[in-house]
Amino acid sequence: MSLFGDGLDAAVQKAFTRPAPKSAGAQMRYLVKQLGGTKAVAQMLRVSQRTVERYVKDQIKKPRADLAARLEREVKARWQPQIRAKARAKAATTGGIVIDTRARLGYTAPIGSTDQSRIRHLTVALPARYAARLFDAQEAGATDQELQEIAADALREVYFQDNGRRAGSLEEVRFTDIEHLEFDL
Image (cartoon, rainbow, N blue to C red; front, top):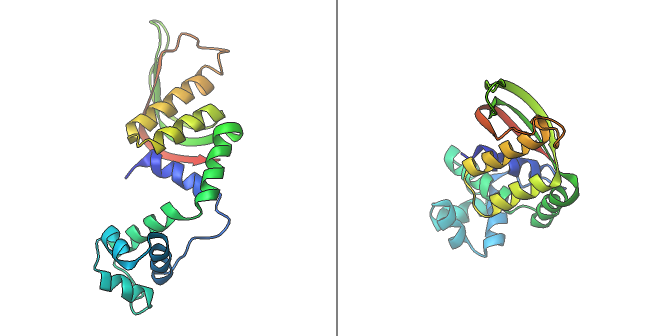
């Protein structure tokens, strides 16, 4: 599970104008239409082509828990791509992104200052350039660790250094032991 990647996806999904299909049959029909056939859907979901056909015809209504999770994930990943792209573009150019987290935050600073890390609950509006960096890295297939480093860099500049007004000698922010993480556009 990717904490940062899933969090970014959830923020973008809040922009959807119509709800994604809920029933297994409707989800299968949507995927068949998107991928152009039952065979492609069967391979993607790791089930038989006949199973996909039975869901499409509503002969099976309740999938196993693991199949239901894969089905929902694949539908949401493809649902309303233009709206998803528009929401990402707006956040990356003008709107920025809000991060709400409860995690252990500390920093590397010169000798004589208190750099002790502690659990903090922060809700910080990050500028558009950081939203752009997060979304670009996610698109490029960045790991959760890489996304976490971008978020830590953003928190260093925006929260700890107050956009250059204080703590100018702060070198690195450590962002660990994440208890809660949520993004909003």
